[in-house]
Image (cartoon, rainbow, N blue to C red; front, side):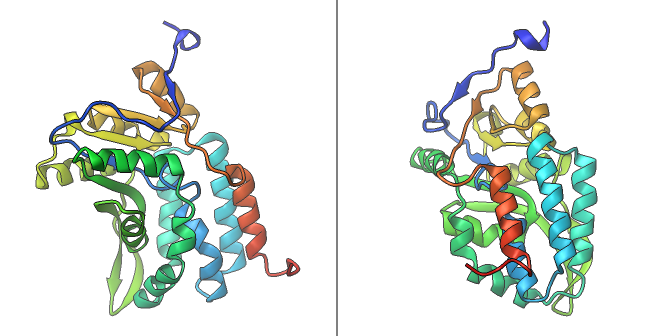
Length: 262
């Protein structure tokens, strides 16, 4: 059957199905649980405190614009992640974590209301809600706690003498993310066939294949095609803010050192 004949079920994202004893709900973070890249949303603060420069912020924003338009492959994501980890070399760990704590409310405000509703429905049925992200655990864990999730699985940067070394300890993308979910499920006695997963990216297709109830959320082109081929439900999470590409551009303008003050 050709792709044109495939019909993908599209849902509003506000309800979930029957209870799944022993299951859990796994949520990707960036552009699934929240409407922007979490690290990019934090980037203006990092620039103001001298941890990154204007060129690094502009380059990151351009890359995220590409992500929003067409999605990115696991190889592209890994390359950008490597650059990010190297950029962090020498950052004081406690300073970085302190900046995250200061910005936790603006970051939490980026959450999709539909995602939070889904999360709470799962929890009301006794299913823990877990965020699983390629972003740093230093950022993901406090944000997950603020949003009311029950746990966090995320990438880790190497640390030595209170500073980031610029090296990767664990980077969760593609197969590594699904492997981390399987490991977490085994450790916490979670039945993955009774579990749900939500993501927007083709790099997480293997994650969706890991659970019994996969959902594509505002999917990129490749994930939308995979959802059609596999008859996975497609959810459309919306927010009252700017469209995603415009929001990323506005974030870049807000951080530009030459932009006049309002």
